[in-house]
Length: 257
Image 1 (cartoon, rainbow, N blue to C red):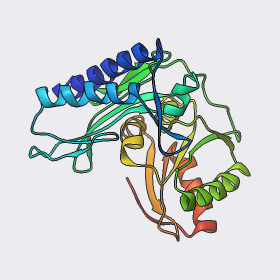
Image 2: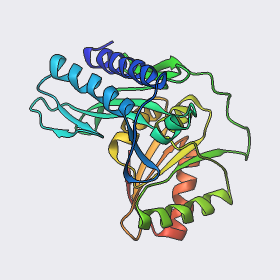
Image 3: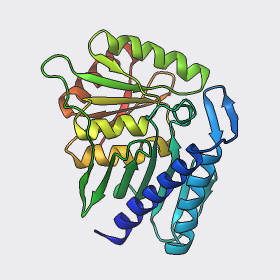
Image 4: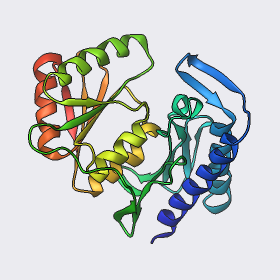
C-alpha cells in the first residue's frame, strides 16, 4: 500500500472506533440546518481524530472536512473527510452510517476508505485496487436493478430530488438508507446497481465514487435546468440509462469520468 492509502484506512478505522465509543454512552444532539441535519459528539470526535492525524502525518496537504471546513495546503493533495455520514441514522441506532475519507490530486483519486462502525464493513483502495470486508447480498438479477437515491437538505433541491425519485421509481427498484457513503459502498460491492446523489457535498461522495470507479463503474456529473448538481454512479449500463431517463425529463447537461 502507498503511504496515503495506509493513512486513509487507518484514520477511517480510528474514527470508527471513536464513534463506537460515543455510541456506548449518552451524548448531546444538536441541529445544524434542520431536523434531519444533526451534529453529535461522535461527528466531532471522529473528525478530530482524522484532522489531528493529518496535521501530524501530512501537514502540507489541504483538507476539506464537513464540520471544520477547509484548510489550505501546498502539496497538491487534498483530503475530503466526512467523519460520520448518516448522523440521523446513528442517533436512531440504525447501522447505516459510515466514516468516509478520500485523498485526491486534481481529478485523480489517490486513496479512498469507507468504514461502517456499526458492523465493521469496510472498503478501501489498497495498492490502487479496492479491497475490504463487506457482507451484503448480491444484486437482484435481470430487470430488477436497484438504485439508491440520496436526497439533499435544501428545500428547492429537495423538490427536484423528489421528482427524480418518482421518475426513477417507475423503472427501477429504489433503495434509500440516509447515508450516501453506505449506499456507495453497496454499489461498489455490487449489492446495488447505481446511486444518484442530488446536490450533495463532495465529502459525502468522494470516497464512494473513487471505489465505484475502481470496481469498473462509471461516475457521471450532471446539472439540471435549475443548475442542481446530480451525480450518477454505478454499473455503466444502468448509469447511462439513468442519465438518458433524467435528461429526457430534467434537461440535464454536463460530463462524466
